[in-house]
Length: 166
Image 1 (tube, rainbow, N blue to C red):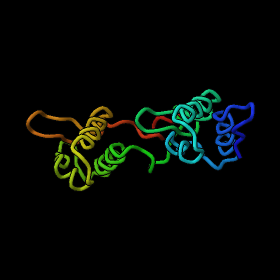
Image 2 (image 1 turned 180 degrees about the horizontal axis):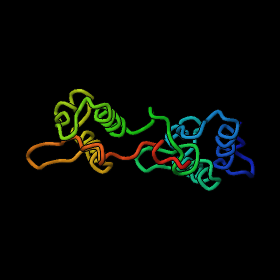
Image 3 (image 1 turned 180 degrees about the vertical axis):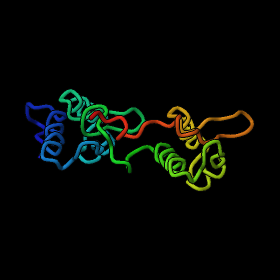
């Protein structure tokens, strides 16, 4: 229960509540914390107060914020569950898996933007983000006016087991 008339600011009281959920494990590393909108609704507070709750939790190093995606338990770099990854990342991972499995061979075209849009039910911009990510990571290359193709294995990013030190 919040003490709205007491000497402890509301944002700090709410940060204590959310912080306790994190410490107890009710919110696990990588999970989203309540958004500013959810905090406003659940606690009947103003936008600025909700923003200060997040700032307080960041200052305590309990959460980190990813612009455009939200705030998550843990410090920056804490892995998030795959279901929390942005949609373009999920699509890119799926395409990378088809390349890794050999379903799409080296130097063979990946599905067109239109095909991927229909398959995933997303906008062209989302598909373009996924392809740009795949290109950056080395999974694909684009030939102007020809399309986007799967890269040969030597251009793929290393797997986590390949990067682990002995």
